Image (cartoon, rainbow, N blue to C red; front, side):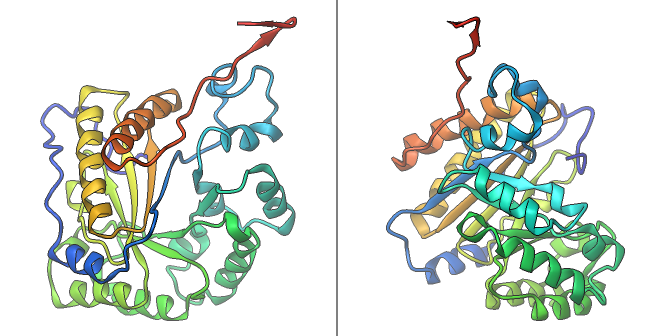
Length: 302
């Protein structure tokens, strides 16, 4: 994720801001689950550097999703941003993952960036019909708005959301800076998301601390975290996220989706293991960690 990435982070204040006041209200209204769901993963599965470490040596391209799904229980699915999957692809993906694994597909750019949510009924239907074929393996779709799509475009977004199929769980990622400034329009926008049970994406990046809005609109937190090669600040930031997620879980949060972005994909598993360790300690929930695969050469383990 290049959005908000800085070449120099030495002067960045990575402190997590306090919650928006509406977050506590949203969680207070939710019925606390018997057991919350925590999904932690990456934005890609075709991670060639993992072959011989987190994937078996010699793993073929067609097998990589299978092996990815044995390491993590969710995937931020960016491939759907570039094309709407056909039934064959959906079936292949569904067959590759175990029970309990969920995909979080990004809405196609033809909808969000090319048509700017206008006259997008047909591609939206095609996309939603396709991902509903994932069945229980569908987590939450997410709509990433272009950085130039601001509050003045709210009527377009509102109309699109009103017509969006309610059977598809949806999150919205705002990027224009004015979405994070209090106004009558932004208040109406976030209130509409609450009313329609549409989740907000929270993005933690160095160069745009304003998108770290800390406003939940449903008892679901979807976090996109941009790390910096396991710099010490990655770990302190993840510690803060573990504390905040624990706080939200105590308040009634149902589900966490947490996606780790690192420029080098080899840095993603250790960062997620660190977060998992912290969350397991604070929540008591058992979390499966990614582990390096035992490799075989000529019948010998190494």
